[in-house]
Length: 361
Image (tube, rainbow, N blue to C red; front, top):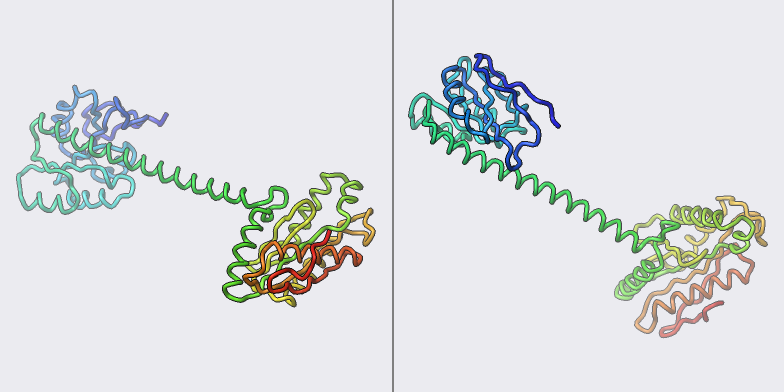
């Protein structure tokens, strides 16, 4: 519950304290802030509102305290005198309208005379209504309630819109997170096989249109089954994550995609990359993983974790296919393993209609 605030009243009018808890809901009081230096006016308006259970009057007789008081009590309507000692009522209206906290609160200007020029200026500066004081009780109550209802409805619409905007932003963020989950490998944080397949299909068709080279690397951690047997599966998962991080660090172009292909196998798609460039990347990836110096006591090729890679680069043509590209890279990976591991091998160019390399085991 919010704190109770004593109403600002310098003329001894005897108004009660104001509760600020949960106002604006159905059945709660609407706060009317009266800014007027004349005690007789304040008392007259207090009497008009005294038997109205839905209205709570707060009187401020010091114009210098008008804005701070409004920020404290958060009124639904402001009744403001137009002529006060040491202050211009028009200027106060302008100050209210410029204030970010209470700038939208309806202001009913109270004037001692019916002056069209004053009316016109008050409305130009943002006043919501204009009454000659002391106004008729029925008219005053009707106008207060009309403006209070309008203000409350607008405030509720604004709050609903803000809540809706926050919910929309939250849903958009959740959708982004969900989308990331559908394309990301949970263990390594790399792209998953599903996303890899989509990227390969997209880049194959694009490179085919542009007659540009498309390279694919398939990589395998050497003797990973022995690693798991020697160190345990939790250590194996940690190894996969570290290798994945090393691969991500080595591939810097935004269009290049590193993915977990399955198990201990990884893949890298390199659009617009000829064979020489693909070989350069393959060497960099192998050395980055070796530089981790992850101990592998069960390896037959090195005392640390190493990588074998298959490399292929082609200019896609209507007779070829993504499946043939993958098969060629897989065949090259098999050749790298057969050649001693901890190395890369390059697949021969695909033929016009069929891959020139038979998939490896």
